[in-house]
Every structure is written in C-alpha cells, then in structure tokens.
Image 1 (tube, rainbow, N blue to C red):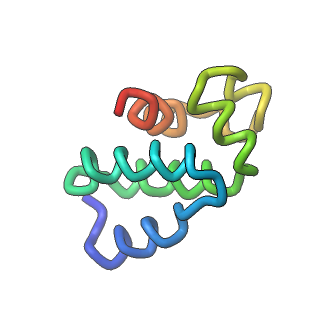
Image 2: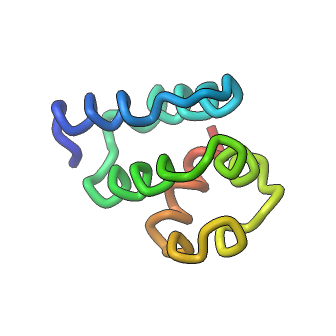
Image 3: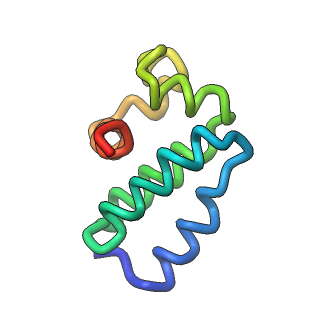
Length: 87
C-alpha cells in the first residue's frame, strides 16, 4: 500500500489546471486513496506528466493511451486510467 506521506505527495502532484481533470482526480482519491498500491501511485504520477488536454482526452476516452503517449501504454497505467474513468 501507498504510505500516508507518499499519498500526500501524490495528491499534491495531481493538481491540474483544467477543472474537469481536477474533478476526475478528486473523485479518484475519494474512492481509492486508502487502497492505492505503490505501482498504482507510480502509474498516476506517470499520467500527471501529460498535458491537461491529453489527460482529459484519456479520461473521456477520446484517444487511446498508445496514441497519446506510447511509453505509457502499460498495464499499470491502463489500470489507473480505468479507475479514473469509473469514478
């Protein structure tokens, strides 16, 4: 599991410029904060390196992950993206 300090740093890193992204991310943390694994936390950090528009495209499934950032087309990132979408 992700420790309290690591979770706090992750929340801070996940603040975004687009309100829509913040809404998805806030609901994600409300649901999964207590059960996030280190792997899921790292995948979330990797997603936060994307631009706000690319991240929103992924949330809304307008573009596949492989098109937005081929290096992130991994199972752990897909898992976190699914968690974001289903909240």
